[in-house]
Length: 209
Ligand SMILES: Cc1cn([C@H]2C[C@H](O)[C@@H](COP(=O)(O)OP(=O)(O)O[C@H]3O[C@@H](C)C(=O)[C@@H](O)[C@H]3O)O2)c(=O)[nH]c1=O
Image 1 (spheres, helix red, strand yellow):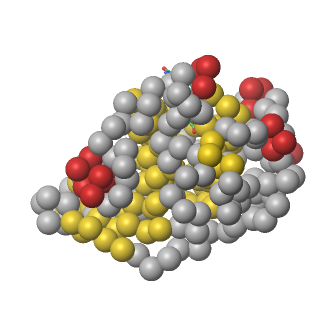
Image 2 (cartoon, protein in one colour):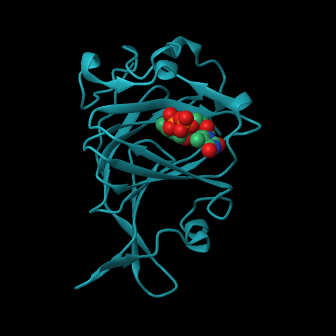
């Protein structure tokens, strides 16, 4: 199975209604985007428009106006891994992920049956300095590893959590060959994620359109 390391294409951009430029980067797996909203910095700190659904729809995120649930996670230690997770139909879920405190190494795996990049992965680094957001549409598994202690992750989801649609895959499956920033024996992972099935379990979870 081929692996795909992170490589950015030339940045594109779009403007928020206030006239500020949202940086939009396409990634090597079709459908994934890295969005970096502008931050207005001044002496007391900064402010940023973190979600504008009309703008997201304009840059091609069909579900940009359809977030149904936000999810917050606090992870106390560096080296904590969550994933790989996805929701399949009828609860298929797109995710817009950002790190509001500390830093994470975030990864998406293409599991769209028929996709020319099936089984390949892309990673990005999200942190509280860059404010970048990883757009992961339905069809991809998602996971992350904390790079700092006391890390906070915020995830906007296009459909509500539905345990009957939830699917997991083992984070360190050798077939995928994901180059995690933490060694197998040192990752701090939940019992549920440690017991997730291997890549061979991915049978028609999603179809490439
Ligand atoms: C605590 C909580 C969780 N949930 C959902 C969110 C998630 O789908 C599921 C399990 O949540 P946990 O926080 O226990 O597990 P967690 O391992 O944090 O799950 C998350 O992992 C990363 C990699 C993702 O991609 C997220 O979409 C989500 O699946 O339950 C709710 O809907 N409401 C809640 O109040």
